[in-house]
Image (cartoon, rainbow, N blue to C red; front, top):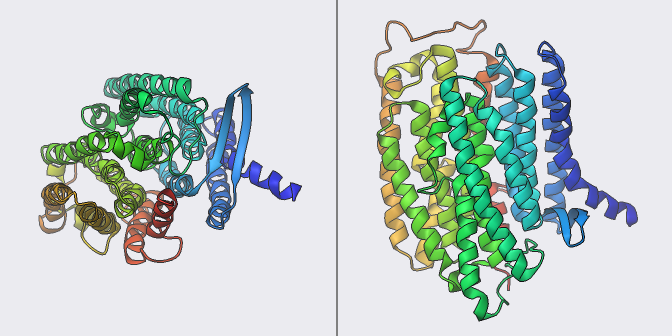
Length: 503
């Protein structure tokens, strides 16, 4: 029995170290150590995936996995696995493996690869720490580590635009971190250590403290809303698109924006409790911010000719579906928001991989340059098509499932105005994605591409760039077609909702 307890106490920490240790070793490697660097990257990603698979099974069976380190009296660093943390850590782990393959190919001839992959691993480690954080203190620590680890990735190219984009990113996220820290310290002064507990921990607080709890929520929302790109805290995201495509994929699908959205979900469900948050009127504030951001991001995406900037504003819009689901009281909407945490990730990483392929293979960076690109790069464009149609909400792709449950949840809660937001968003999604698909498939290609690289082999681009978006596009289809299968994102989101609303 003691061995079992020891094993369950070590597993969350081992998942964190499986990327942290390879990352530390990669920093020490010389630039020419290409094979060793790739082996360390892949070994860490595969080991993490195996450990997370064990964690999924254990949590599903009701096991308790917790690594606890006492920093000082009353200050514990806690890594704890529950159903919600497993959802996010699984997404991060699976997409890290795919992104690692992509990044190795994308940066094959780039300078400073050891520095890049070192910070890349540190960034994923921080994301895993956020996912597995068992209390607010641990969450804040890893949240700030994520900010610092991502900055060098955004600035990686070292150009004036990259440096400027990285500085804007750092200014926004550091300011958000200050707001988050104020809220966390203020809350701890009222309640003592704040553990994440399904159903929340604050509902028993006396009514005299409710005004302070509302103010604290606003500080936490600002701190988390920066990374989640809620309007008007989103300004860093389009500017960070100067980063290499693997970094953009990491920002939008795996790490930064997902950390903010995940944090909002944690605060609503596992700190305040969704019913108590509703009583305080906090869900209304969150719902208004999320709804405006959904429409605003889509409108801004319509105006962008830069492909990555169009995708960035799409992220501003799409990630807010997660916050919208959290703002609607009821388990059905919760399922919609939770499952979109995964579905948006696999769809958006597909789109950014494809954008990187167009840029790296053909020199295509703008929507206006995409005439006939589907004929030159059919596999990449097919993957892009699946991701784009999923974002619009076309069945049977994963995005349809998210929107369906959000709509059902809104009706169940009597909040019919949400249907208007979802309909407007769907129309706007179609308006900025369908013209891209039309140009790619039905327009004649130009006589020559801006900067074409003819890679050797049978396929349209090098394999390390081609197969990751094909794989993630397949996941988009599988997540939609097999939504009711055991251990699917939808089934896991249902498990989370059941536990959060348990009496």
